[in-house]
Image 1 (cartoon, helix red, strand yellow):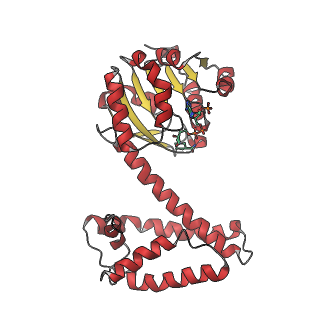
Image 2 (cartoon, helix red, strand yellow):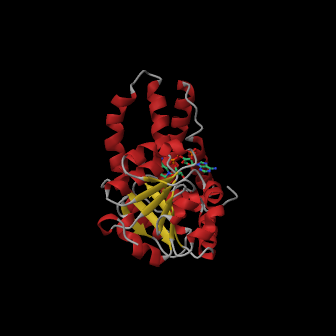
Image 3 (cartoon, protein in one colour):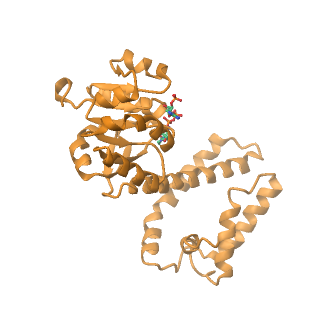
Length: 294
Ligand code: FVH
């Protein structure tokens, strides 16, 4: 099935902040774009730009060979697509809803039972980045689906295919989100700490950026140490970090700032030192994270 200018018709289900950006990108790229959202008014702006409003989720599924769904969670995906399952046969379902690997695998099984090809995806972008040079999306599931619709999916951002296991995209997505939450959490603690002395966040951020850039530059060598399971260090030992953490925690308390974001890392450092790894570098903490009894 080809639409205007030979481009594949696409359906986007879910028009929240992200779904609207996805539909907008397909429209801008010249695809006939059918849209559906539970609250119908969220389709208005897209319809004014040329999108086709489907009267129901089932109608939206029937409109295109490629269906992209991006809603709150997998429960919502099921509420929407469950009754329309029969219409998925012979189509490709790309689920860009955030979820867990097990949910993605179950969804793939269900979609395959309906006769559909299934790709699960993780969007490594905020809505404003969609279709821009920095957006990238992770996919896993049917290799045939990725090969067939790679060009269409690249409209949203660079696609990275991770493998046939549908759970992989969710796993990588959650892992990458963790890195962002860690960074943002550290930033928030730091801003709160200097804020106690009336330092404005904007002024302080001018120092944060070069500092974090230097820290990011150290990640490849940390990754090498982790892959080699070699935690020796000539950078800084856990012993020295343990002392630094006491200062960080006590200074935060004295300045009236909650330690809830940083205390769990201190606990890991202390545990590693107590286990006899004080001379090792920070990468040793990954070994502790793998042990659920901590
Ligand atoms: N926004 C972002 O920056 C992130 C970037 C990375 C990927 N995430 C994930 O994208 C999914 C959608 O997120 P969103 O930002 O578009 O979220 P909202 O603007 O809150 O829109 C939510 C949509 O979900 C629909 N919905 C919720 N529950 C149901 C339901 N039971 N049945 C049908 N639809 C449902 C909601 O519909 P409505 O409330 O407008 O009627 C919106 O379309 C999400 O997985 C992020 O983690 C975004």
